Amino acid sequence: MSFTVAIVGRPNVGKSTLFNRLIGGRTAIVDDFSGVTRDRNYGVSEWTGRNFNVIDTGGWVPKSDDVFEKAIREQVHIAIEEASLVLFMVDATTGITDLDDSVTRILRKTNKPVLCTVNKADNRERRLLANEFYSLGFEEVHFVSSISGSGTGELLDAVVAHMPEEVEEEELDETPKFAILGQPNVGKSSFVNALIGEERHIVTDIAGTTRDTIHTRYNLYNRDFTLIDTAGIRKKAKVHENLEFYSVIRAIRAIDIADVCFLILDAESGIQMQDLNILRQMEKKRKGVVILVNKWDLIEKDNDTIREFEEQIYRKTAPFTDIPIVFISALEKQRIMKAIDTGIKVFKNRETRIITSVLNKWLETVLAKQPPPAHRGNMIKIKYVTQLPTKVPSFAFFCNHPKDVKQPYRNYLENQLRAAYNFSGVPINIFFRSK
Image (cartoon, rainbow, N blue to C red; front, side):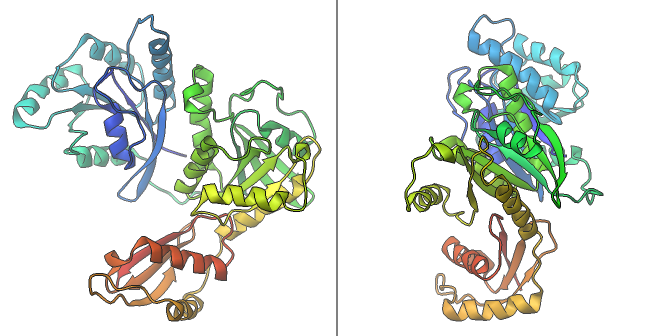
């Protein structure tokens, strides 16, 4: 199960700044004006080797007539409902406000763990004044500065402490799990219906008809797998409706459950920015990926159409271009089984294991072809490589200066691994360690 952290609180307490710090990027809009976070942001945070989802919600304004604030209020309820843990952010510079009390009353009704997170407590005077937040009655109160980062390490330690112990998934069911993802109305449910042979899903021309994830077991024609169909992931600027927001959270969690994700594109629209956002989520979570270009029957074709379409996709997905692409028509049931067989191959590629002796013979050849460049006069010598015993293909290269191996050479090694072994559709991890 995925662990999801929701950041909630009244406007302008620094939720988006903390979100950006937790996920190591700057994707949320951050401004000094109240309520600039009008939609939700989603990301993945990693701390001490543990990964969890983070939801950044808009500022909480109870009983407001503003249409945006009403939507934010309702979506905060959903975020709390779907979250495993809540970070309740307050502001040390203003003290406890009526709005903070309103949020507190809501959070007391939930059985989820709540960490009261006092932001802007970045000097001794503010830290002393911030002790008043203990009066809100939460067991855990943490003092942070989301801008400078002080206190965030301790906060993350507390988050991880609430995560369940990692146990070897007692997956008695070892059949592949395929998540069907993509923007609304690209044909995800039609694809599932074409496979199952029955109208298991509501299929209409209205975008976003599928509101929740639907699990379907398929066991026919010597193929056995589980399909996870999700609601369409709409561009965030268009997520105004509660159910759509709920669907996005479920879709992100579906990626967590899946082994391989099918990203379905509309052939007439091509690959768009939101498709790339979905793809990056799959990459971050190290899932197998297959791209399905649906409605291919509607496209006028010549001998170069497929090649040109693939090149257009790979230009946008770079540097991750080792992704199988299948051109399908769910309506005409064209190449549906080829899509599934490709997904099964990607599932098997994720399980590829290469013995150390074979890997090191490969490494000799690769180093002879292009040795690692020196860094600041340091000659980098890679001694040997081994595959780590992880679910995702991961390789540890042992060398004398691991921190000096730069990204271009990492990319070179990954490309050489992909050329020698079949990791098509599978993100791989490369680590450099000191011998």
